[in-house]
Image (cartoon, rainbow, N blue to C red):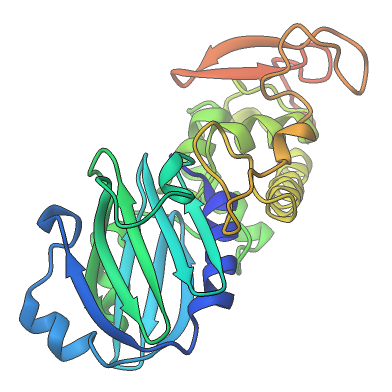
Length: 292
């Protein structure tokens, strides 16, 4: 599953490519991938222009000047491939569909634009494109169950208050809980906790105000760095130019078990926390952090 930096990287690429273009036709090759009526598609999609491409957590939103939006979730193997006479850009699961002739056997939806096509490919058919009124997006179940965006209007006070709702849970589990903060996955939880020098098993109630402030800054720093590097490309994802992200080349602890810590030289270890493989430095990240 792509994390926030990967989806944000895709959003930025698509925004430059498709903003202002008119949708002239939608060809549905798999109804599960596009669970919308033909009547609504004709009334609110066909003939309208794309005015913006946004993101909420791991969901992409293509806003139209009809007052409706196409919500896109790539899930595990989804792709968005933009093809024009002069340009071709792929985003998503990096199989041969990014470069081969389209449509192919994995193509589920074709969005025909005024001078190009946007192909929605999905090998496993878990991804989807939904059509909803733009002003009702916040009522969508996917939106309501997610917490605030870590890089958008999340103040330090709000961050602390959200975490304090789970005082008896370990901090790694809380960071992975999308209802607390949206978009943080395993990679970025490990990296943020390392930078803040917090052990992943530490209970939220045992982390003092100063350490929470350190974690707040670390999360923003890690996510911004990953976005600037095109995301992590954790096996499955490439950015909007079909290039693999490079963040993992700069990771401090994630997938660096048995290698020396870049700060103190202690061997990085891998343990299980919140049912996930977790990387940390046992010297830099002590089990109990009670600094207040």
